[in-house]
Length: 149
Image (cartoon, rainbow, N blue to C red):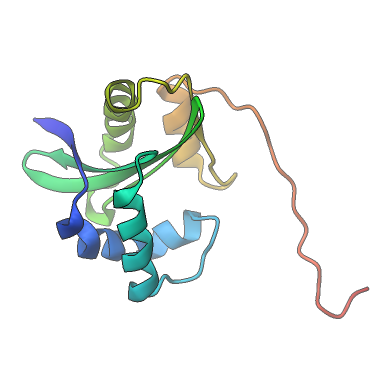
């Protein structure tokens, strides 16, 4: 059995642990480690927001991953991660499908879902394509050395 449950205050430590796992940091747009104080403050605001939702993916009675949604008007940005020991089992696509239904129920004004994924995160890119998303944009960046002007 699998389902998504709303995140609660009791999930703060689990989500902190998952957020700082090395592969999650690598695939995040901010690769730096998150301090516990930053996480607790951010999570408290997230739980208080009526335009955001944190979900815990439970599969076979085990907390297996997390998904988050932030709503802006009729559009919602989603993000997710699977616990390190549960990766490679196909759970990402299952969780994204459940999340779509959860958003329909919890945020009925949402008409479009958006997910931002790094180019080298091939697995997540594939999961979004499998679950019905289309690739819309590619962004290019160049890091400037501090000494160059």
